[in-house]
Image 1 (cartoon, rainbow, N blue to C red):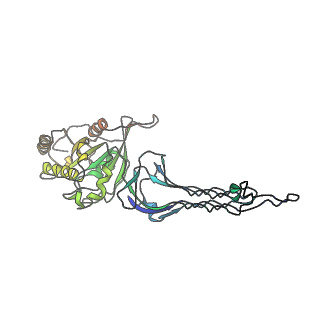
Image 2: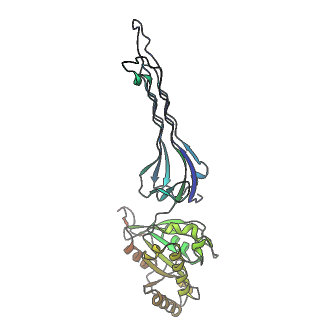
Image 3: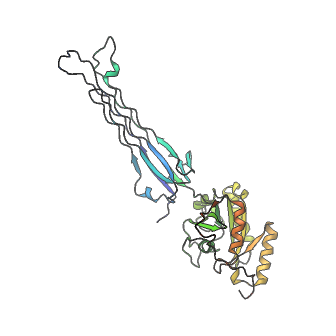
Length: 351
């Protein structure tokens, strides 16, 4: 399925039905009086957040959503039927913005919640509503009230527990495929990942949702590479897993560049918990692993995990570290306790 995280759509609620002008016409009743019914209310338009969607691709093929109008009133005091409501289903984490693209109308972050975006027009009153002691045969009924119409922007921000960040080709997709059942595209060139990928990590009877976004480069906050387009998807994450390419000559500089881009995009991202992992350690000797790990720990003041997504080494330890920073869900008892295949053996230059 193609990923789409932004769409502009048109919504219109239904107009109210017209009131009816009618009079009783029965045998032996000479002056029957008015009996025109009211018009029905127009249908309203709602947004509903659902969990089984993760893209806005459906809105590429349908951009207009119109609710039906209410039926007109009828004689014999019969009111028109209400127009059917239109419910637009969007992924959890979708922001609904006004036509200017900046004014936030609603942030759909709770599964199952609904938001009324356009209220249906009220139906007009029939002529029986206007009967008075001085006007016992009114020949007037109200027209239905018009519905609301507007253009809105939909912008999706993925909701995940942990966001995978790092330079292109640092091994984020390899890590995701190693610890979850997600199967992102993996290749040995930068920007293999062109859109976010989600995966569910099961460990110690707990569920953690991981989000892998395209790699960041210097200037990402200004739009260089794919940065500004996808940085928004890590705003909702509870923590970051910062993956650094162990084959990089200057791992400290690589770390600081990514942190700087996060700060320039939104300073609040620096306040989120961060776990640091030195990846591709299966291609390094023990001496070089120790040197780069200590350099990172000195520069960051945090523990650095030496891992290999390709060799499935060190993944269990770093995954358990992530559990400390996220609100996780219990796993059903009938499922296995873990899906991570790791090796517990220590690092060796022969690995």
